[in-house]
Image 1 (cartoon, helix red, strand yellow):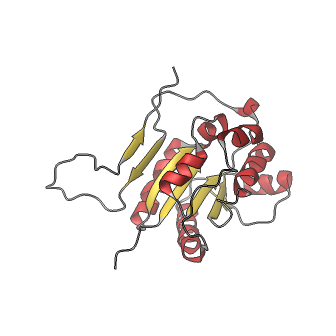
Image 2 (image 1 turned 120 degrees about the vertical axis):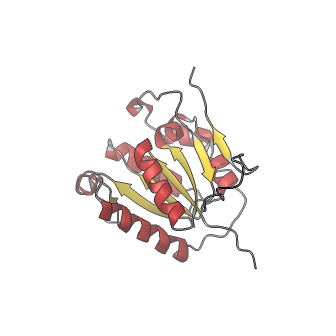
Length: 195
């Protein structure tokens, strides 16, 4: 019997780390989609549409500085009824500082570039994908671009280069070498220009 592949969404601010995590999770057999947190906060990435289109079971979310504003934004996202049953794996480059500033006690995975950081993160995503109580539903109307914009503190935004990829969905396994390299119909690559 065919099973739908498990989709993992990565929301981060670091493009290099996005690609490292993408390769790691694809190697583990997941279908990986990604988005940039700055695009999400600015409204350039429509989260309800992103979630509806890709239907991730697990969301890997990085909390960058300023920690209080980004933690509140994450909590706003999590409170949406459509997101409550999805598993969140939270990452941060300075977990101790995040815990001091925000006062959280939940598990946050520290990513500072050590190979064992990524291995622990991969294991956490595998566990989250197995323990998720999420079952696919229609997107909830409460998570709207306007509600995301209200929850976001736009004063913390940095300008982005226009040539960066916004959202890409790739296969978990590579194509055979002998096949022509054409993009399959499910392949999505949205490159937006900020001009």
